[in-house]
Amino acid sequence: MKLKTCTLCRKLFSSDGPDICPICMEHIDAAFQVVRNYIETRPDAPLDAYSLSVALNIDLRYVQALVRLGYLEPIEDPEPAEEPESATGDETMRKIDLARQLQASLTRSVETQEERNPKGARATMYAQDKYGSKQGEK
Image 1 (cartoon, rainbow, N blue to C red):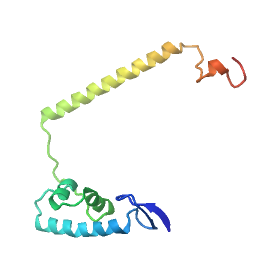
Image 2 (image 1 turned 45 degrees about the vertical axis):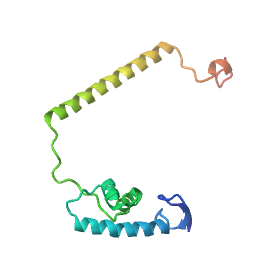
Image 3 (image 1 turned 30 degrees about the vertical axis):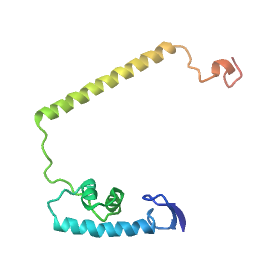
């Protein structure tokens, strides 16, 4: 058996199985029963980890562990909400502006590098000017 650290409570335990200690697994099993009953009795309730945690007064780590361990499966929204045209256009313009800023930054960086090392000049490594190259040259 290997000595592992529990991903939830950070305590050491020995196991060949998951990275969750037996005590936390008991809490997860109990949380699963509560979450399952809540989902069955309230099918229209919001089903994200945070809202389940708040509604049931369960630690968020346990709800997230239920999803990670496969007790609960994340569901995809069958009909994604459509964004209004203006929001999509604003988002596209923001991305274009960010891309332009990145390109300008890269261009400035290359220009600065060329100023430091003009073409034809050999780049030197850190402290090479003080100690010389590997062949003992200065």
